[in-house]
Image (cartoon, rainbow over all chains, first blue to last red; front, side, top):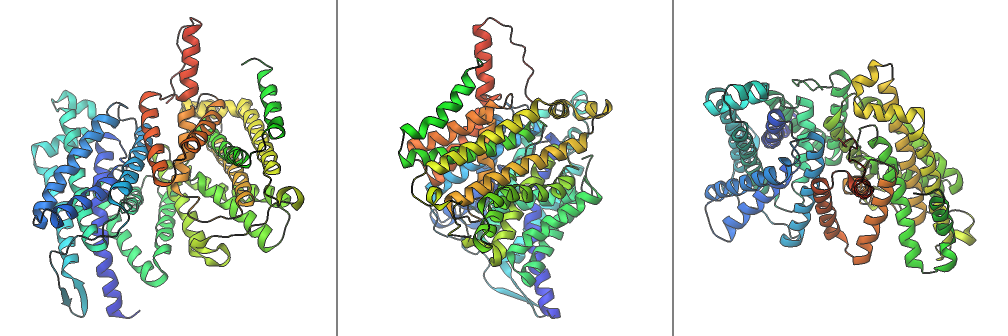
Length: 287
Length: 318
């Protein structure tokens, strides 16, 4: 592997890492605030990609309009899941996880029945390739990277500086105390679900433009998200960002050197290693 | 249940192939047997408060061991069966040692990832694991006169035998002193360790025993179907087993058995297959969690309690 190829691998790894990071941020946000591991998140990724595809090709809408509408649709599904599944179970972590898997399977196989197995892809919005010192990056990938990084920064700013963001962090730190200070937990929960759904929608649209859309496409990002979130530490946004980029890079490098299937095994080995030295993850709460 | 019901049921099951010769019926019974062993093995983890999402991974390890031993090395199935279970248990020791460092949903995620890794490893190495194509033409058990024919009766008895042995051992374990330790870990592991119970050690033993029987089920699967591939022992299959247990209920060992029997039979009756079966299982899982959180057995107990006029004060299942 020469220097250019290495740079090439690192560049595409960073792009993948940013997309995975964005999807994993949704998972970790929900876990931090209401201790729920949302398995349906992967299906939101998939459904949003389909929504964007149909709105751009069938309805002929511009990409970003379609993306905004898909984000709204994804939020509706997420809030519906919250009220229909997670709220009746009192956000009990184990039961919610199991119910999430059931819902995810149902949605996924319904999508197979509805959309069929034909591979389709969202049309590229930015065709062309950029040459940065011998390293070639598709402009579409660059757009994805910028969009994902931008949204992550936006999320950080929202949580740090806005009133609602502060309320979310308060609930995350101590739910009872936040309640006593007049924070409405229901509105915080709904906001968290909406934010995570929007992140899933953007991630799904990006994956859909880069790799195509199919009913199974939510499965890998959700598994990767779980590994990322666990390495970074459940509920820690910073940990998710670092672990997301790291997993994207190692995936890309092991994928280039050894083939894609070993990448997942390598990820798992890293997770096991983290569990040995630090069970709660890099920046996590108590395990 | 009165004390003659269980022996009567076993005798009836033993006599069944003498009356019913239908190969398809016996085939469904063998599949039910494999599923019951898997569900009961998962239930043992369940009474410890742990749920593994990688149970199909251990089953795959057992199936792969049997496939390699009987096909490539021409060993007898009767040696391969206990060896497959043992190797599955052996793999479970380090995996359990590490994954049991974390609790609750973290444990779910690690076991989930483990199941994926087993599939990944077996799919990646074409030699000797056959890659995504899997391994075909796995020889049936000896003697070929009994197992090598299209007559399923021998496999029916093999499957029934495995079910009875598994259920008996796991039932004894769950009712033993060690079983009490497991139940109390489920109720509260800090409290259990405060009165001197070896929480990590007991969890690890439960994990290994559970993997042992999953490996045995895998071994039976490999020799019965004669074909295994990474597409069989997927995460979906792990979840199906969990659905058996959740729908049946954790409260007693009848739960996973009833769950596995009902949920293997019902799809066969309607002949729903493939993706629709996955959809049905997903919906069943959601509705049984929301409407019947203690499973069929829990609902039945509550029903009989109410009929007998007993106050309903069973401990809630967490």
